[in-house]
Image (cartoon, rainbow, N blue to C red):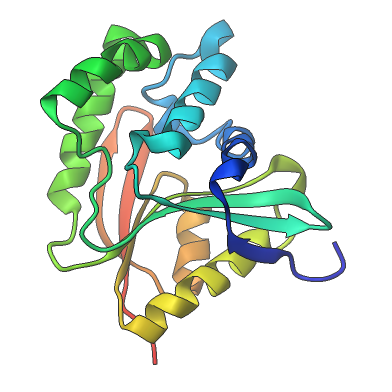
Length: 205
């Protein structure tokens, strides 16, 4: 990749490309591995999770983004605009999603996932904000500036609109990346074998 990747909003027909990049990018993500099934079921569980997340499980009005080089997807992201809350489902929707969640997490994983969700909710900012739910770079493209290119492009309209951005991270190297793009750590907590950071970025300019 000799030039920066092309970063753009993804169309609905490109959901598989977004999901595929995230599935690859999060193979060793501590926060996800803490509650998803592991062992022989790990790959299938992660694939099903991101397929559902990209489709509508996070929120039916989510924003999908892709970074490409020559048409090949290198990075992907999922955002929520201000006023939209991740995994904010009705009781009926939760019941309908229960079989999927059990298949990808199991009973113990579900308990861990609910614990994480409750702790993250305690750190969520109260002011209006855009939420970067997922940002991932394909394994073969990591370390080549794809994540930075995506953040630069995706944060520009938030700055123009005066919108605060928020995210969660579970890898220290990602925290360093987000810091370079203006995010500040606003909260943190630890669980066995994993640490979570919550980060907020005020609009610039």
